[in-house]
Image (cartoon, rainbow, N blue to C red; front, side):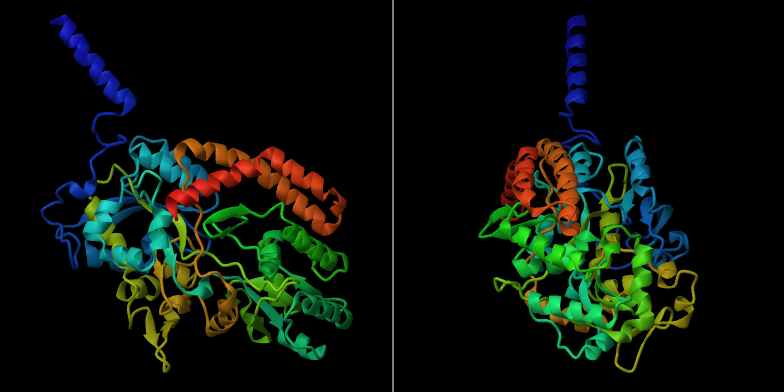
Amino acid sequence: MKKSVLVLLLIASACLVFSGCSSKGSSNQADPAKEEPSDDFNAEGFPIVDEPITLTMFASRSAANGPYKDMFMFQEYEKKTNIKFDYNDVPAEGFDEKKNLVFGKKELPDIFYKAYISNDNLMKYGSSGALVPLEGLIEKYAPNIQSIFDKYPEVKKGVTSPDGHIYGMSSVIEPLVQRTNKLWINKQMLEDVNMDEPETTDDLYNLLKAFKEKYPDRTPFLTSGVQDLVNGLSGSWGLYRQMGYSLNIDNDKVHIWLTDDKYKELLMYLNKLYGEGLIGHKVMDQEYAEYIAQMQSGELGLFTNQAADAFPQVADQYKGIAPVKGPDGDQGYVSSPIPRDTGAFAISASNEYPEASIRWLDYLYDGDEGSMFFAYGEEGKTFEYDEEGLPQYTDEVRNLSKGTGSAFPGPGGGTPQYSTLKTAGAVNTPIDAEAASKMEPYVLEEVYPAPIFEENASKKVFDILDDLDTYANESRAKFITGDLSFDAWDQYVSQLQDIGIDQLEEYYQDAYDKQFK
């Protein structure tokens, strides 16, 4: 008898240690989509539940947002759905640290919203059972998200982990206008130097020289930082950003281009511009607030930014231009993928209403009514249609302490949503749309998001990335400023190889083959 009891205890202990037995929070927990929902749950229409329920939400709140509990969208959505929230909306500064503390607790919030859960943490907390798999819930209760998966297979691929589960949803940004930094040129300065819009890298060099000669006290060209500087011109050498990194994908072959001769040529070109004072030296070290002030001054000849809302006072002085053609005939431009902000939304194993939670999310991916509600609210309350049929916020919304950010969670980015051309006007103007049209012929048709690496590979990948990015970025800055001679290029290449760039490329290739191919 004693021996039998001892055997049972050992089996139970092994079950707990190896998470091999089915229990909430274990690696093989039951699919919540296979569980019976509560009796008052409605699979279609509103309210989502007949009797009100209250869930806990842990969320990031950007500086552009007011408190979530006071937002029109959340207040009105509560009335539609019968789902209330206890909000723990944490300021973006320090959010990651607090998120790590939250994941360390036994009782998790019911949902993570605007949560920036990294891909490696999605895999970590999903495979451990802290986050529930969403794919079954989506298939059963989220027709809008499922429709997006059908329309954009890269969205589903982008959120699916190597184990086949979806542990977090991304935002889906359809309009190109929201996925590109634009090249903004000063119309008056262009007219004053009597030159046309630049079509090649040589044209661009000559134009910036003319700007400097005509306006010696102004900055001919500036970007917010070195990465944006490289992104703004790398397509002219056929270099793009795929999978969230400095790599190209050709015929299903992944290639990190940080040691390529074309990248060297790009850096030599930037070194030439920088050395002649055609690129503002602030590009190496400036706060974004300083950059905004420079854009708003109206004295920059050329700069990059996603939208004109950063410089509304002088927006009419600028126009977007097409990317320039490089010395080998390359003419491309870097854009973001349609799936963005993976890990924006997740449901924890503590949530007793996963089916209601996924339905709550699904409406925001409606693409029509739901997406409009997320971005603009309700006609007659928060917006009206103008004579051209375009939605315009009411003065009451515009005059809130943080403007639209007091009424809606979208400003500041990172929200789980489906942004369409119809709703893009909430954050982009016709000026932005016209500038984006100049970019459209030159962006890649399919841009892949950052991959979700297998758990056993994730730490190795990020260990290499830490060392490689530190060295590559420091060297990049020095090559551009001239602090590092291009005679040292071979040494730079050798160092990246020693750090593990070839091994890193293999990891990205493996992730591409499993997640996107």
